[in-house]
Length: 500
Image (cartoon, rainbow, N blue to C red; front, side):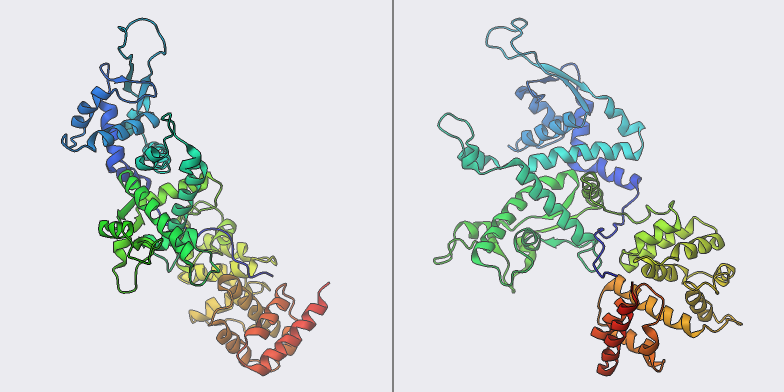
């Protein structure tokens, strides 16, 4: 037996596709891309690369209702147009190079644009079609966010006006991987029980999760400087990701950025953004949370990359064996929610019988399956009794059945024999070890299970359960009574000696 954790990510609770599609359609950047796609027509001109002709940008700004006096408005319009083109909401025909006719000398040639076929999916397609288009838009925005900002690009120009990538120190794949890693960490912090949940995550925490090694105590000045640099990159990137609806973001306080640019004497290399002091408001350093749409988007990207990222409810149409195998490694609340959804679509007597059949087995995961089965049966009413009674004589399920019936005050429940009692004890501890590891509560459970049986360890090593030696070894480490722990170690040795 092994107590190693299952590698699956905790399951995420997603909104329905219909709700997520509505969120996608009102995300500012996606909504602008849709508006420009509907505006595109015979008079829309594009240059090489499909970008809007410069003299068309003012009209695009007006169509989007942006402030014509704001110097950033053409940038927003250009970005929305690029999203529309990249997602197929707009079809462009680029100008032919060196056509030799059709334009006067020195006059640029332009291609044309028109609404794409996919635009119709927004009105007549399914919610999944809208989400597919939004995911394509997200890919474009993430690619843009991984590109260095304009100031860095200008600084990296060589004498010939070309970008010196060595000087820029920019590796596109490295930057994309870093941003994907940040979003994966934010996802994990969101879906893990006891984590951020629906609350925001401080930017320093997120940056440190990518930079500071787990085994490091107090970070060095060099590591803090890396965290500070990562925060500044993420501040810019989250500002770009918010309009597509991926995150809600409170940026780093501009006053802190000014302080970071002007370090106090003797503090060079330790900018103010390296991390908050204890008495400072952590929100000044940036706060970010994934939106429900963002959770959907990050999970979709992880699934595409081959990461196992379950969602609550996706097992509703699976068999009981698949259900118990999966929820065995879910956090308890998520497991209970998944089980409830699974039961909701089935006739209770048949569902109980299927769960009990799936709980059998002598493989490594069987004890935890039986524990989850017991949890699944906990809320079941009288309709479940015939299926439960049917396994009273089963050596693996008889103890579970007796517990269920006794908790409901059912009469004429046969008492378990000694063999079943000891087997159930080993199975219960094995399940707890698999579910939660060596918790503070486990020694108390061990004491409770052994106090009521004189000579427990003299009998326990003989139990025909695959996890007997593993459980006894754990009891030898964890049992709060020193005499009992010594007896457990001796029993574990005897149990090991019986194994082939």
